[in-house]
Amino acid sequence: MKRAIRNPYLTSGRKDYNCFGCSPLNEKGLQLTFEMEDEEVTASWLPARWAEGFRNVLHGGIQATLLDELCSWVVQSKCGTVGVTVSMEIQYKKAVLIHEGAIQLRAHLKDHNSRFATVEGRILDNRGSVCATAVCKFFLFSPEKACAEYDYPGAAAFLESIGGETSATPL
Image 1: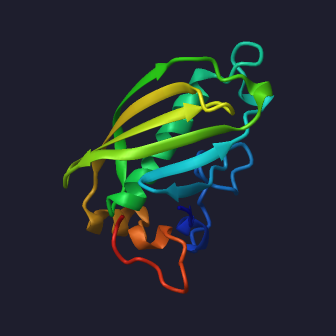
Image 2 (image 1 turned 90 degrees about the vertical axis):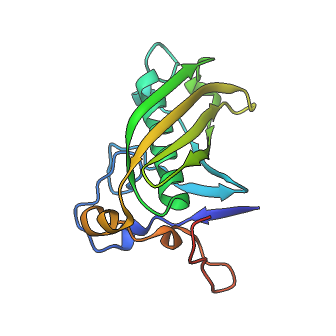
């Protein structure tokens, strides 16, 4: 079952929300939106020529940014806090061709404790072939610090309500 993931930063009252990865207010950003499908956070994104490396190939740095952003939303929606990426191991398996349309991003929480989370993500082309994979490790802030210093609203704020109720616990 797919469920939309709400972007709580849009209604937080912050006037400076300008994330390159997920803010729809950043005209030069990726403007990602996310869904939860079973245990994975997913997104669809349409590559454009401005993100080209070689002719018709999505730049590897943009692919890394897509995966890093996706994996950070796994942390926010599943770990009950925010974190910063401390390492990212990416493998480019197949060129992402811009003219072939939307790509799919998928990531899941591999493991976590109170200090670190490991998230695995991948980029798939419009035929479902894996083009890139990543393992991201995040240092996690305490929930108190995440709320006080990074405007983290809690995991429940990311979940669209179903039948008028929203889950109050991380997935």
